Image 1 (cartoon, rainbow over the protein chains, first blue to last red):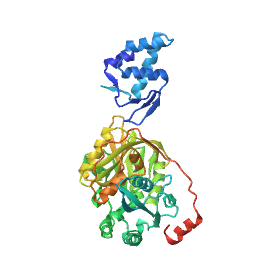
Image 2: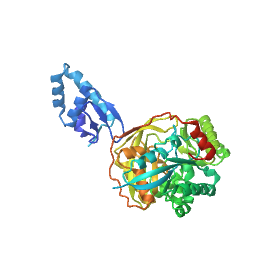
Image 3: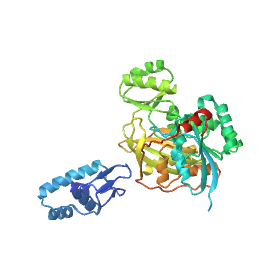
Image 4: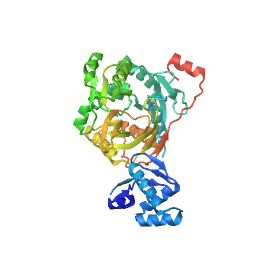
Length: 92
Length: 348
């Protein structure tokens, strides 16, 4: 089971206060931390924010980028871990 | 609407790498749409940069150090007041507040309004009273122990755990990670500020600060939380950002409501990994970063002037989140005559 599944099963959500600009700049107003995302990370975060399912996110990225499903799953899992560390994801 | 003309005297013009709050307080007042203020700078040193910022400070006067006593200070203020007709006086240094609070009634008789904490509020928030303060107002605080002599420190040394914060009576704090560093910081602090020197439990976490203004009846007129983004080697914020954190606002409201805090204040807190907030210090005045609050929509210096004058002062309910301040240094070019004027005659 990928982390996105765990993410949904545990009902973790993107912190509603997080501000994400179109350029991929993320600001956490509770901690004052800010981050710059690369375009793909910004895309994933945007899809998570829109409550897209794991399959929908994976399908969208597989269609758009030249990547295998296993590599994509691993990359997304790592990214989700990072989002948790940054407290961008929180329990609902 | 025409602006009300006021003469406002302000201390803390030391806009250095360890800045006093004078200049940012002045900037807030000059931004006011209600007041047309003539600013009188009150300075302790000839080289306080604010004296020479002629676009912000109209006239400056030397005043005696707090150690000279309240009577000498009052005589000097009386002299300045005869010339300037001061409406409001805003002291901005912790070390001078005792004298000004003690003299506030006499200042009032001279026609000078202030808006300062009461002596009880000023005394109970001292660093060495922090544990009692925490108990009284139900706020988490780190443990603090005061030392009034070297002998006391040596006696306590075997039981100490590191790291520990070593703090001066009024200013300065150093982190000691071993006994040698503790001894060094202890000597440095007591020779600079006298006793007590304080040892404060180290709480691992992120430092957050709140600037606030209490109306003296339990109401918070305004409060803006900030996290330092860039810190100087003296631990001062060189950049900071406003935060959206209800817990910080709640704790500020609680302290102001319960203590009926009167005047400006800065709360220094540590947020640990479990999001617990520990109050580590209360500064009884507006801090040097107060202009961030002005920029974020809460002109607390203006509100403080309104309170001092007994004007109706509405509370601020919002501020801009994610507003940044970034300090910079700037070389003022001054004439020797200006320096001479201040050195010889005590005014410029």
